[in-house]
Image (cartoon, rainbow, N blue to C red; front, side, top):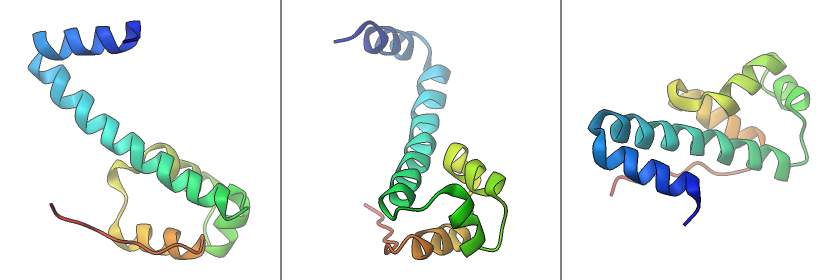
Length: 91
């Protein structure tokens, strides 16, 4: 286990608020990473994707780096523009 993982594990056990914020923050971060990878796999730059979505490069960057407040409709448009299919699951 890395030092970072040890630190996070210790902090989460001692600080419930840290644990809650860390877990939700990680999930939001993960969405952005998935979207960025889908764009890159499609061979598109942020600028090219922005043109497809009739928006600015900064909007694409914001989605990829701060996906916590993304609207479902925006997510659907993003995914379609990179040639993917959006699937949601409630488990």
